[in-house]
Length: 101
Image (cartoon, helix red, strand yellow):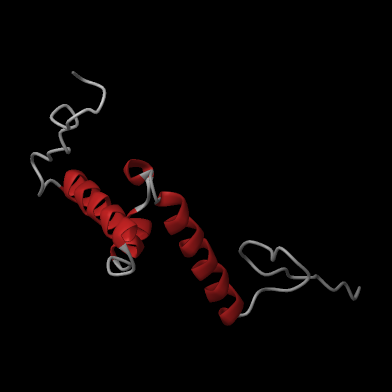
């Protein structure tokens, strides 16, 4: 008989580095991605993922700009899921102009 040894490889995607990440490393990477997505979502709420919009809502009490950003995020969530039918934008035409006579 011949003694042939077969190397059985594990199923699934191979690790990116030399070895697989630990659970703590995977979670840390996920938190970093979530924070980056929330920062990128500010000002671009229409294209932001739901998780990023929810993260923006969590910062509502941080400051006035954060409150306004959370308001836009809430409006976008309502638009996506259909519980906000009409959203009014602030009327800029009625704002008094300093240049008009």
